[in-house]
Image (cartoon, rainbow, N blue to C red):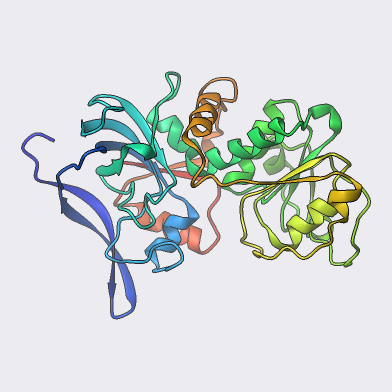
Length: 331
């Protein structure tokens, strides 16, 4: 940073109700007590980032704005007693990239309370291959295990299995010895299902039941749901006794229309996953697991690398629902 007064960032600007993206030179701002300046090596593209670029006020309230809810890099300077210059760190969630300038920039300034120390066995590139999506998937698996879910109990269903969270959840469960059933809107090519570690698959005819029955025959031992709405209801109604179902998304709906019977007659557990405000102690545990016992070898075909200059193309693909796998951004 020596002799530099500005850094490059992808900025979203609003002009007469229209939103445009461009790369701008941004000035450095002084650090307040407890703040850290991080030189970003890698970020990653998430659906929230794409929504932020088109003015979704549910994600970002005020513009101009720099998206990027993920970042990994090196501490450049610090007014924190917890982090010193030269340390490798990860920042995901909280308000980063939503209502605070995000990781699509060469530098970010964040509070110390948002920062995770980079695990020894992990690099910035690896961290962003996981990103928020991978952390959410791992947190879902972590909660399942803590609630007593075991491979011998039977198969675990993962909805939205070909998406960012779902595909990593499938791989983690498979690595831990679970039989995994992929649930997607439509049946996928068998090679795609095998690639993410799933052993079988179901489509919306099974995972999106519209019979309105209060209970369904038991078909799976547990589930990780990223869709919400009727899909979540179906997974709960068809779960084995004492099974656990996690929920982390609402792309299908934020409503949950069902009876209490799966909970009081089968002892099914519904576990909420809040990756954005997860306590730092658990956040560090999960990242350490991803760096070590839960580490994954990502299929190179599922990882694309972008720059700030090429990122717009990947954003458009994501908004058109044509993207597959993960996009990491090299700063």
